[in-house]
View 1 (tube, helix red, strand yellow):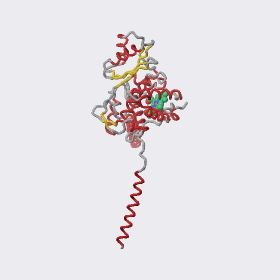
View 2 (cartoon, rainbow over the protein chains, first blue to last red):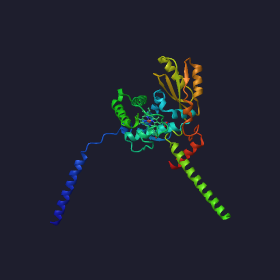
View 3 (cartoon, rainbow over the protein chains, first blue to last red):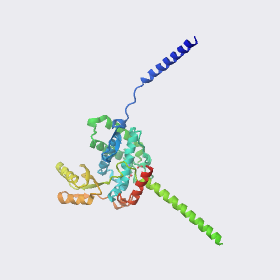
View 4 (cartoon, each protein chain N blue to C red):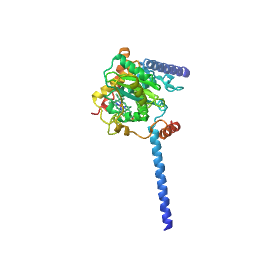
Amino acid sequence: MKHSALLAFCLGFALAIGACKKEETTVTPTPASLYDRVGGTAMVNDMSNPGTMIEKGRLTLRSVVDSSIFVIAADPKMQPYFPTLLGEVTKGDLTGFAKLSKNFTDFMCVATGSKNYTYGGLNMKAAHDPAINKRIPMKISNADFDAFVGDIGTGLAKNGVTSANNAQLVTDLVALLNTTRADIVQK
Amino acid sequence: MILNRTRSLRRILMLSSLACVVFCGIALVHIYMVVPADDGYVNSDIQLARIDFKQPLETEEFDRIEGFVRSQHGVTQTYFNKNDRILVYAFHNSQQNSADVFRALSQNTPFKAERFIPSQESMKNGCPVGGERSASLFRRTGKFLHKIFG
Ligand code: HEM
């Protein structure tokens, strides 16, 4: 008698847990992060660093950042904002350039949802405030923010992603960049 | 009297060596922070340069110029902003320099162009850490520190 009561209790308990579990498994899966959509954590060869592996998501974002730096360097509207960097690069001092490239890539990795990288630079407000970051000589206007985002769009296109072939990804990346506007535009 | 003097001398010595240690510590931390850790950039000697064209150009002329610059030894990548006629290219600064690329372009093509050089004032800006070229002492110190601390 004692045994059958215990058995009934255990059965009831197991059924109750089973029922709960069933409910849990019907939760809808979380959508893939932007980081996953640009390659995610799959390890691939890093062509510019032979013999090392890199996450595909980071590789994509780094290529986009590097291409965008070209576009920005060739954009006369951007030139007045980067006198320190341009001066250094012309002297052959690439430290600031390497740091910006790395920090921008780190920032994009974290912002798109990467779990394995961290951003160690200034926050967006401080980075674009001439009173705090001496490397930027003046406050940024709304129009120049748009021009900068346009240059990143050109950098994306250089990596084969355009509104024509992947409108959703372009829209989502631009929307992500736009979330920084309030901090960056200080004019 | 003599004892007092030795004592204050010893104190001065101790204070100045402490100041030295603190200063060196701060300098090393600064170098560590300024020289970035490896991510395919630190080892790289890639430099950017810009050439501005002062006359309207046809499509095939853009291609000819870009093709010429890209074919120069050490040049890895080019980008032409055709609206503003600005060419930006990347090169290994251990193999090439922007003055030579510009000279070769001027000698081999008829286009009116100008090598972009930032103002003297902006050339003075920037931190001395990292020095002129990748072999600088600061940079090597930074890389050494990154090797130790990651
Ligand atoms: C669209 C969103 C933007 C993002 C996500 C972004 C991100 C960044 C990051 C991560 C840094 C490095 C901060 C550090 O190293 O501590 C930086 C620096 C900088 N940014 Fe932006 N930025 C954006 C827009 C802009 C715009 C619109 C401009 C100018 C028109 C601009 C000009 C600069 C300058 C001049 C620096 C300092 C460069 C140097 O180190 O010499 N940024 N930005």
